[in-house]
Image 1 (cartoon, chains in turn green, red):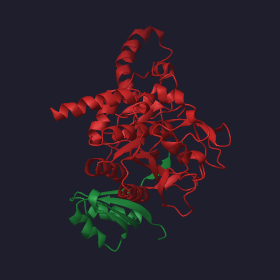
Image 2: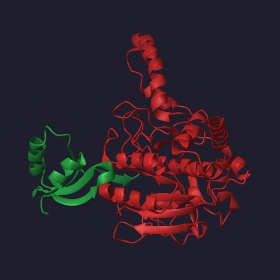
Image 3: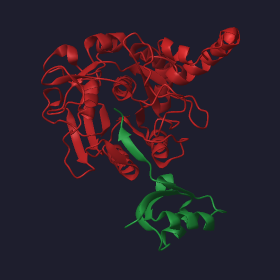
Image 4: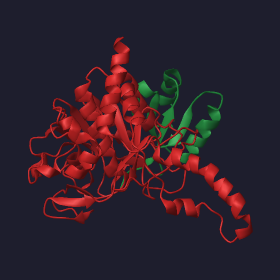
Length: 70
Length: 333
């Protein structure tokens, strides 16, 4: 877990199913109806995976922090 | 949520038609709830804590929001919520500092939907601006389009600059709410659109200046009025006014779609106004000889400013009711 951050990965179910098997990702949660998966990974691994999947429609993004509006 | 605000928003006219939110379930996602507050006694149908520190409201944020929607007026009938006969479902998602994680928000939204809520108040926003394709915005769009649940989101308090609305306020299907003062003038801190992909947001504005609301036990995140009440501010407090109006309209027109309800609320708004300060600050200074050109730019910019700051204007529940009646009748013929 050390050095790992939470990322959201958006893409088709087929692409997400393939990515879920990748040992560099620790899948936290899958939200199929919005074609999203959450996973813990290191930034370096995500950069690599972005390069590997650049021809596919997959969006990798760091999970955004939210805050109550005060 | 004072009686004066309810009258100004046309809510008291709906009350006189026996439209009080009865039978409607409203979801509130945020900082938890003070279950012991007399105004909320018997109003909470279900709660779920998505953190590890219990459902109690550590900040006081969402007890105030719940009160604006559904307070009974136990201590003073003039402090009733807009839809004071609704029931509430509360999802607590924030840590002690008010922060929340993206995937937890999605879990909480799904849980609220599973509880059968008809409208959700979402006074939480992302720290960064998105274009509406982030997962939380997509989840909000999904709930509205596929599950028929209205989602009312705060625009945020990052104004007066444009492009300052975060997720899920940027979600296309959400009703995004900015805030005005008691004279219907936009508050400077209210976040402004457009979205990064150029859509108009916020959709409308509602009162968000010194609103007297229920105060959670042992919290001081507001200007304290008394043991049970405090004055709250800005867009998170404006948002439940619209969620309350949505609940009233949902009771009056159970067959209306979320899109029809949104259309009625937006197309029936009263005028709201831009603050003079933000108009002046958009003028260049120190170039008097260029004043004429600057004024020309200023007036052409004014329209853009207004459109992306106050949306359709300040909500009016009674006019929305009439508009929805018209829309539903058009559908019948």
